[in-house]
Amino acid sequence: MRPVSLVPLLTITLLVFSAGHVLPAVAEGEGREQKVWATAGSPAVLPCHRSPGKVGKSWKQLPGKTSVLWKRHGGSAHQEPHMVLEVGYSGLCKTALPMRPRVSLQDSALRNGNFSLRIDPVRSEDAGLYEAQVVYGVEVRSCRVELGVMTVTLSPPSPVLENEPLVLSCNSSHRASLVETRWFHNGRLVPTSATFCSLHGALSILHPAISDAGSWGCQLRYSDNEIISATYNLQILGFDGPANPVVYAASGSAAELPCTLSYLPSAFGSSTVTAHWSRLTGGHLQGWGIPQNLSSRNFPLHLPAVGPADAGQYRCAVSAGSKTTSRDMTLAVITVTPSIQGPVSEGCHLLLFCSLTHPRGHERFQWKHLDAAPANSKLAVAASQHQQGHAPHMGPTLEILRVSQADTGMWECSVHGPEGRLGAVEYGLQVTGAQVSSPPTIFSGQVTFGLTLTLFLLLVVCILALALQKRKRSPAFPALEGMVAVMVPRKKEVEENQKEKIQQTEC
Image (cartoon, rainbow, N blue to C red; front, side):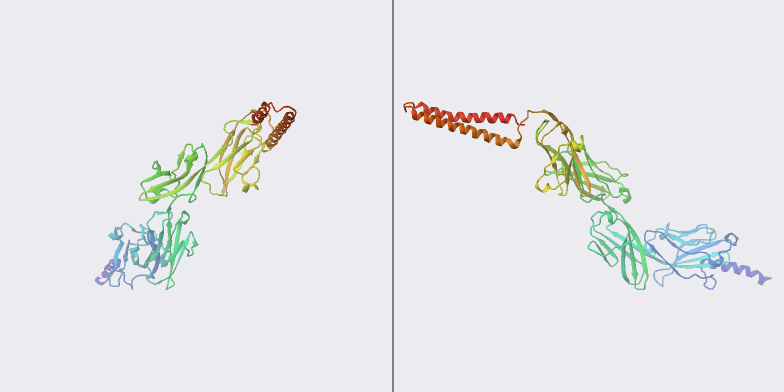
């Protein structure tokens, strides 16, 4: 009876010993070594499951409890493996101090035969060979997994400012020599150019723009044909909209200068944000402070009423943490200047000039009478010689040959560019009662010339008559010559009186 009682005792002793040291001869289905790649900063799962031949069995029917021990082999062949995570028969969990609390079992209850080790987040120093030894009931399981780590680094660290040069570096723990590096932006291959330069696993972006933000992927190919890929989400702190915006505003109206960040300041972990507007005019720097708002990325500047003196360059500077980015913009003011100030008399010749401060050279002007149908407006656009071919109502100058009551009301001058309508200004035209009709301007010079010629002929006739009379009379009357001399200034007075009468009839 004594030899029979030793069998259970030897079996229990063997199981206890196997919990810490699984012998190859006893380990059931010793798994082949697997390889898992992970990116530093992201989670990784080292797989280890119950033997495939036993999957059909119900886990609850297995006798006894389970113990799991994950070890990591050292960097050198002479270094002993060290414990990473251990779960004993009692359920007590032990974790190595350097990896606490980043390691855990995928199934903490161990009820579904999943003994996989989860590392979150992975660090570059976590690369190496891991081994799991599992004992459940009378069965033993061993898993060997090699963890390879890819590291994508950004210099300077996030957040990167718009137009600030940056370098993305891609490395891995693979020991073979690197043969080729390929970069992808949002899934599209990025060719090497003057803007993007790839060398030895690093990508340099000389002038990053907001459009360069997003997912960047690197693909490394080694001499043993191992291909490894990793991704990095690049965030660039800048502003929405064009690089050098121009804001168009009508003279006398309110204007709002935009300042919108590409990301919320809180996305970069910034707890403080400040915005400052400034304008440089004649060497004097004028500034406005914007209240702090971490929940918004908009910091506009509102100007209640602008004029030509307010036009010029403005700058919006936003500081998020230790990083400060700024954007310059131009305020262009549209103004209408009439040739006749105040109310205009009916029948007058009127010119309206539409001007724009800080033009870029491609703007087009268009006039429109807002208070009348186009068919009733007596409109003629007379711009400079290079605008002769423009369509009607186009050009910076609006000419109304003879103002009438139908021209009363609001006239709009709108500015257009390649991107569409840029801005507009309105001008209210007031027309007073009709004036005394006057001859057309084109004939006023001819009438004046005819009157002058008539007076000259009359003067010549008078002089001839006096000369004939002088011959008939005695030369003892010298007063006659003085009389002729007095007639010359009388002729000038008549001409001046006639010109004043003509000018009084004109507008």
